[in-house]
Image (cartoon, rainbow, N blue to C red; front, top):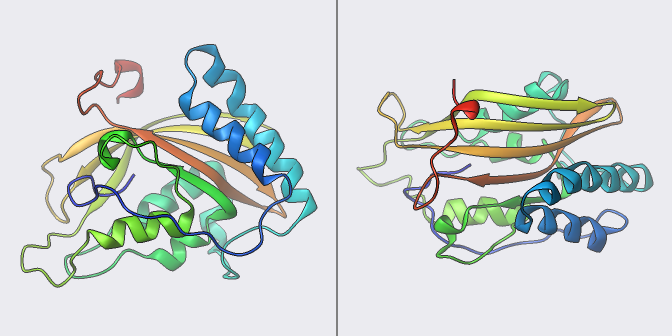
Length: 217
């Protein structure tokens, strides 16, 4: 998630307030990102379960803005809306307002460490936006825009929780040449008649193992 060629490090911001039980939520998601084998699989629904309980206790995020109803009607819809919000034409910014409406207030976005100079860096939604904006020069004559689009997905859903393993390709705007591929792990939850993203964790085959065939079209 994000433009690998122009993003490398950054800062994290936090809004006021938060969900009930935030330290436990954060620990479960960080454990998920750091774990291996069955630990990853078992903690994913646990993290979402904690977030479901927290959402029932307090308000959700979205920075006070209303989401487009069709963006949040299903796990598939909210994932595709996230990709659409970070697509931009040359000289135009990402649709950050739309992006914000997709997340709970205390959502985490965790880049692969190759994008953060080797430092494990969980980001808030605002932190992610600042991180990307810091390395995006919209006025540059060389700006070619950006598109990140889904090419394959595996979705697991039970009741009000869903996990989407979404494989993506990155391109410059209007250019079919592939800049890179990766996998986004979306954790989502349904609350108050709509879906929310609680976390995105991603990785790319940069200096690591290639994407397995089962995650490719």
